Image 1 (cartoon, helix red, strand yellow):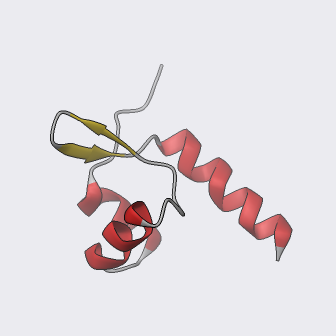
Image 2 (cartoon, one colour):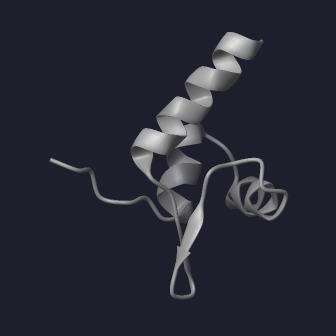
Image 3 (cartoon, one colour):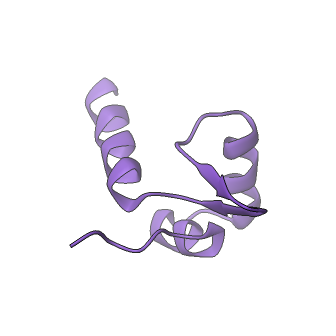
Length: 58
């Protein structure tokens, strides 16, 4: 079963980062994100893959 998409607040809580950090990184295209209408959304699976990529790159 596919997980529900995260909104900005959910991703912020998951990462332990401020909401402003999430928006800044979306604008800079540093974090996988997309829009559903006017709403910014994040795929939990894509976020986990993104984090794993950065963990392995460090």
